[in-house]
Structure formats: C-alpha cells, structure tokens
Image (cartoon, rainbow, N blue to C red; front, side):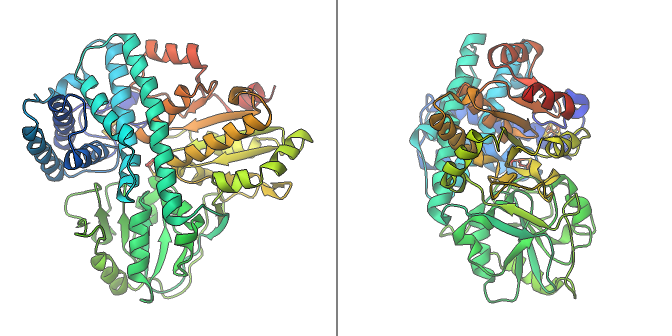
Length: 518
Ligand code: FS2
Ligand code: SF4
C-alpha cells in the first residue's frame, strides 16, 4: 500500500505497511483500484458526465476514499464493480493502473496527487448537496474532466492550471452546498450549545450529513430519546429547521481524535454519517452504526432508504435498550467550559456588518483571524489554542470545522456585543468565511488581501485540500498552514505555492502573531 493523503501519514512521508488511521493495506489497495476504475469511467465517457447513475458513483467513489470514511474492503469492491458496470455502458475505458498513481517524477506525482485529493474532498461536499436535491452540472462534469486528466501526462504548468481551475469549481461546489443547507434548514442563527447530557436514552450523531440528522430527529420525536451532536455535527444547532426539535439537546464529546476515550463505555449508540471514524474499541463497538459511504467491517450499517429516507430503527432500539445514564451528567470542552457557541455563518455575520465595520473604523477591532480547519491527533496542535488565547483582545476569531474544539469552550470576551470567537460552521462553511471577507473588502473598498484579516489554517484530511485550493484560486495570499505541511507537496511544488501565494508554515503563536500584527 501507499497512502500519504492525510496529515498524520507515517513519518510525515507515507503509510506503507498499515495506515496510521487503521486502514489495512488490502483496503488501501482496493481504494487505489477504485480510483483507477473511476479514471477508467471518465476515459470511457471522454471526460463528460456519464448520466445519473454514473454521476452518483463518481461522487460516492471519491468520497469513499477520504480519510476515516471506509475501512471495509468488500464495500469498496462493490462500488468498484458498479463503476465497471457503468463503464461498460460507455464503451472502452481502460482502468488506470492504480500503482501508477503514486509513481513517477516527484513533482508530477505531487501535482497529480494534490488534484486527486482535492477532488476527493469536493466529492464529499457535492454528495451532501446531492442528497438534498441540489446539483450543479459544472461541478458534476468537472469530476470527469479531473479524473480523465489524472490518467494523462501533463506539464507542470498544465497541472497548476488544472489545480486553479479545480479551486474555482470547488468554490461553486461549496456555494451549492451552502444553498442546499440553507434552503433546507434556514440560515444558521447564533446558538448556545451545552456539553452536558441529560439522563435517559440518547443517541450521538457524528459526521457532516445534516439530512441524516434531520431524519433521525423525525424518527425519534416523542420516543423519549435525546439527540446529541458530535464533532462536525455541532453547527446543526444553529439551523432553525433542526434546532426546532426540542430533543436535539446538546453536543457530546470534543474533536474526532478523542472519540475512543470519550465513547468508552457510553450507554448510547453513536451514528457516523461521514468521517472521521476511528477503529472502535471493544468497550463500545457494539453500539457504533455507520451509514452512507462510511463503513467498518462488523459494524451495523444503515442502508439507503428506497425513498431517500433511511430507517434508523436499529439505532433507536439500541438507544432504548442501553437506556442512557441514570442521572444528568456534566461534561466540559477541553478547556473546562460547558457551553459552545455556534451559528455565526455568513447571514448572521453580514447581518451585523454595519456594527463590524464601525468597530473596525473606531479601532475596537484591529484584526480578524480565521483560525479554522481540521483537528488531529498529532502533537503540535496546541498552537491553535495558544494562538487564540494570545490573540490581543481587539481581535476577532472566526472559526470553522473540527479544529475549533481546541478552543470553542473558552470565553475570551466580546467586542461591541459580539463574541470574540465566532463559529461559522462545518469545514464547507469556509464558503461563509469567503463571503464575509468579500463583503468586508467591498465595504472598505480594498482587496481581500488588504483587509486586516489573516487565515490560520489547520489541515488533516482532503476537504482541507479542496478548500485550500479554492482560497489560492481566489488569489488569497499569506495563508498560514499547519501543524505540518502535506507530505504530497514536493519541495518544488511547495516552493511555487510559497512564491506565488506567500503560503506560510506556522511557527509559534508568539512569532506568528508578531509577524501578522507588526
Ligand atoms: Fe474534522 Fe474530520 Fe470536517 Fe475533516 S471531523 S478532520 O472530516 O472535514 O474537519
Ligand atoms: Fe495513512 Fe492518512 Fe492514508 Fe490513513 S489516510 S493510510 S493515516 S496517509
């Protein structure tokens, strides 16, 4: 096996014996074959959409290979066989030799891998929009264009061109998902979320799929079961059409990498709707459920429903059987706070834009930081907690994705009635951050790069890759990135990104704050 797609890759170079994530070599190899089959399909359709079934398989096939999604080789093979069937409808499309994906000139491998990994991330977003009935033909079609390109030879300049084109397409995809979510559930509003758990039966829902959560809320209504979000599901509390359910009670646990400790012996089932799933410990593996593309051998999988509605009865029965705790339980975030704020997506922030602009003009707000992205298990991520704690009190911290669990239970005060930490949502809500930045630039009649705004990103998996490519395609410069640099960026490719975009590896919070704030 060879895999270097995530931040925790072995030795900072690549997993070759077994995945640090727990992915077995045979599953990694099957995922490569699946990718080869997807390239074959795109060849067969000549880089054009292959129709509804093919489109669905392309999105699902790419999403399946995202880190911490599928550990189940049989399911990976099933998807590959369905892709073969689709391919056969379109004539001749040779599968791409999977091993060739990671072989060849270092810089070409780097550029090709960056495109593939970004596309894996975008597939997750496209799929979440698709299940809500939203599709953008340009986005769908680009998957085929990109897949076909992966199987071809290109010059460095051509690959760089493809990466920028992809970054712009991913912006469309994030806009699509923003539209899908806000059309279905309304615009997020600020919400205070408790970390405590009430006595009695409950279900923990993890991942990013808001539709799965919605259906579970409907199916548990009036049954005496409470629902708690976990990880990237936290922002659900901000959406009017989800927060209206009184049994959506709070958030359980912190970031994904703490799940094995936090789920240990929990008297409730846990539903994983997407990444990030870790190998379940024996103490709770009988109560972990997967759905959609998430899969792990021997765990119960909730299949797709015939009419788009899944039947969560096994999860519900498990919650009733386990019964929850016999008394209310007090939990906190990692810094000891027991309230998490969320719901500061674009509509809320732009709704107070006048206040924000006045505060900047009056000098009450001196700088904005977007401290966002993924969390992870490797050391060095305390940087983000320290950064937020050390940021001067005239600064505002916008955040998104699961990296915020490092600091989202901190109370670092307010500026002009607005909390200094504002959670914009899941990783896809980077779209909200972009919209806010563009609006501020408009208000101050300057470019985004001239705003008192710095992006301090943490990355872990492939959705962070597609977001980074979008930010670069938009021409956003001087982004800080950590905790370590992607293994798939060769030194030459990194050199280009540093030279063209001023991409900066993080150093220490003290040094970086000094450099940013002068
Ligand atoms: Fe976190 Fe994992 Fe959201 Fe990533 S829960 S690292 O999937 O996309 O961020
Ligand atoms: Fe290794 Fe990450 Fe790939 Fe898992 S996803 S095999 S940890 S590089």
